[in-house]
Image: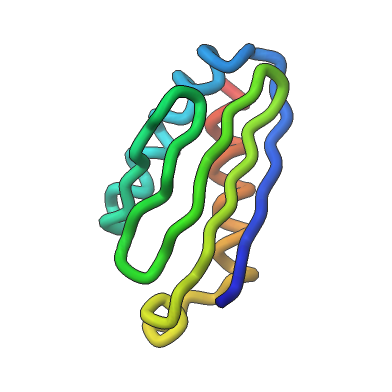
Length: 94
């Protein structure tokens, strides 16, 4: 199982960071992946993928675990990591 980890620093506090993640969450929904929030942590839930998003006062950490179905569908961990980095950066640049 491949694991992708992305760290995005910010200076917004946890509440502000969660607000910025709305666009990122909408993007995930296009791929039938959802975030199930419990406080400042969200479980990533989708077919062939799992993981979590942890929001802290100074950073957001995203961990995605690719299962066998994702690998069989041709999901490349390196490309996925680059896409997450790009999307998070765009979300926090506003």
